[in-house]
Length: 97
Image (cartoon, rainbow, N blue to C red; front, side, top):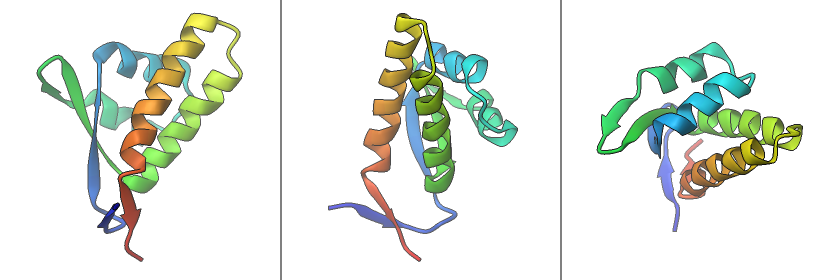
């Protein structure tokens, strides 16, 4: 069962610094999304990034688009892995309108 959250509620995603750097360096995500990645909190070996569900979906769209148009197979695999991590978080929530 999905957890219902408000439109302005934030959810957490755990990403490695390498994954964050790939998003920042290779996607065309908006500055507000990239800034959230830059100010993420260190939790163990991962960085905890906070996004609204809408922003998380937007970020994942940028990750997917970059992966789909990438000629570098290693980069594509890394971006696909990031996409899967974000999608797993997205699928845990529904918005309460």
